[in-house]
Length: 277
Image (cartoon, rainbow, N blue to C red):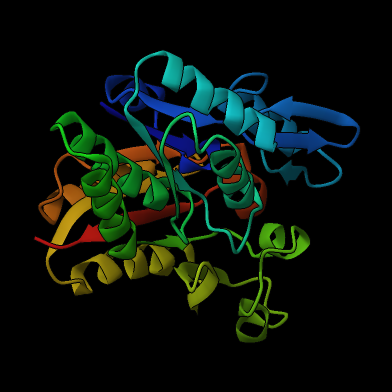
């Protein structure tokens, strides 16, 4: 069987990871002099408590090449016929580079295909899930790889941030800086384009921001899968209710973990989606 590997920026809930036998390689989160391995030494709850009290924003670091090598070896020993790896966008993290170097060094042991999702969070997660389902159906490594590439190419996210401050201070604002300027009191809307954060719009109130997210979903054609990403905002239930009214009864719900949360901040709410039949 082909096994699926991703990184901890995928924000997929543990129950889903376990059900589909998806292996996660964690990034590292550093608060000052203290470093924590995501999901192993730092839970999502602990991260948000620490972030609320932190004077400076935490930093994130990609997994080492050795960490990926260890995972590939373990899966090989466990009987995997091949491995498909889907990573956070190479435009914002060195994780893809580490995964690729590890695959090159173990080429003679097991075939490994590494895919740059050009996404993050549960938008990346939708591609990972598509690959896992293809593997469960008995797909070859070529089929699973092709499925994953098609899924990430047709997936994206659209989210409302409560503030631009975390993206700005974390250096992930990129080309959106010119769009948002110094208007730090707006509610920024973001998406992904060309593998990096891109401006999706800006509004003045929280209610308008949530409406813009819902309207974006309504504007899409042939949506095959929908999920919700959030950092525990008080209006999450209201947002889920609005989705249900629009016919999306059982979306994937993913709480932002440390990797994405460090740059997005609290009170985020948004959608991820995969287009297609």
